[in-house]
Amino acid sequence: MGYVAVKGGTKAIEESIKRLKYERVKKGTAIEPHKIEAGMRGLIDQVMSESSLYDQSLAALAIKQAEGNPEEAVFLLRAYRSTLPRKHVSRVISSENMKVERRISASFKDVPGGQILGATTDYTHRLLDSELENESDISIQEWLRAFQEEDHSTENQNDSADLSSLPKVLDYLRSGGLLASCENNDLQPGDVTRKSLEFPSMRSERLQILTRGQTGAVISLAYAVIRGYGALHPTVGELRVGQLPVHLDHPLLDEEQEEDSYYIGDFTATEAEMLIPLTVEKEQGKKEIEFEVGYGMCMGQNETKAIAMGILDNCLEKPNKEFPSHNEEFVLYHIDSVESTGFISHLKMPHYVTFQSKLDSIRKSKEKTTEQEVGLHE
Image (cartoon, rainbow, N blue to C red; front, side, top):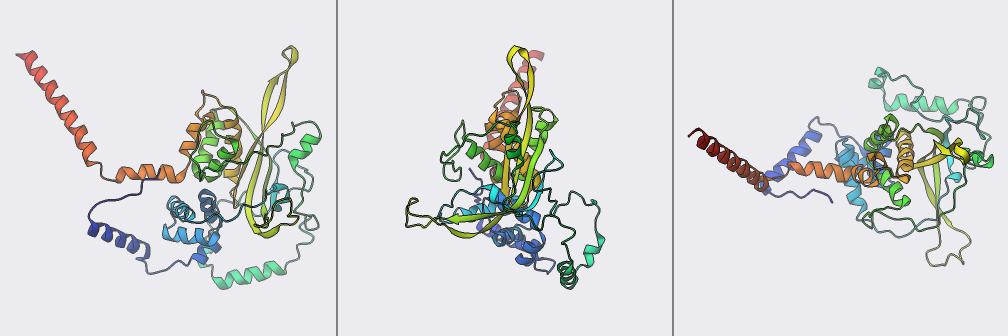
């Protein structure tokens, strides 16, 4: 579903498109895509995640064309993605092999491998920085030179650690018998970009839709869960941001013949493993608290969305008609930015015939009511 078709006077449409370009360039300054890519990392990551296409340059171009409108940029990038052939499928990527740039746990102060704060706005003052008005390429280059010349060896205790093999916090809990082990599921994951979603859905399909979902919508529904629509209060077991390696098998050899794979590059991802407390009734009415896990992962550094994904993942694993946040049809059908934006936008298209029919119906009803009132008075 996608409402984009426009019919009408060709000349009027052409002039509308010209006016759109005028609004984008009327100040006489061109924004170069590489500068968007360099300075709008958060927006780039959001658009790539919602588009299911990891390409920073294309995301920057889409943002420029969309004048910074993320919904329109995602629409453009999804449309472009649909034209691309799928030539290969990578090997399964394990997040345990992530080269970590940022790693925190809200559950434990001291975790194996240590907490790595990395780049985040969590500890900054939310005040406008007026000095950015005078920032230039020269001042940036000077700052970078000074930064690179600093000696961080005494400041960063994780320099000597292997950041591509840090242990998982959840594995620590499982080793202590505090968290149930997960059964390995080798089923072929669903792909909602090639097959329409059917209910009940597979967990792989739900996670795919959640990671493609409009960031604000996913966060809002997760917030609703915590406020009372499910009454969950999860804790971040572990949040990771870093680079994941992608490997391909040889396209002409069978898996049994192929011992080695081809490394083709990395992509940045955010992973959140959420711990959700659950009260379980044991023998003789004894109640104990156990933990369930909610999982979220998305492209780029998009931490709030990954956490929200983990909350909704847990909700959708436990359907509950009482709460819309636990209804997979409600959640999955209403968080897609292209679907929702397209449907709402189509209301701007001509609805002359249907609206006139409604007017005619109202007029006839009023005329009938008036005739009845006149008859009563007579």
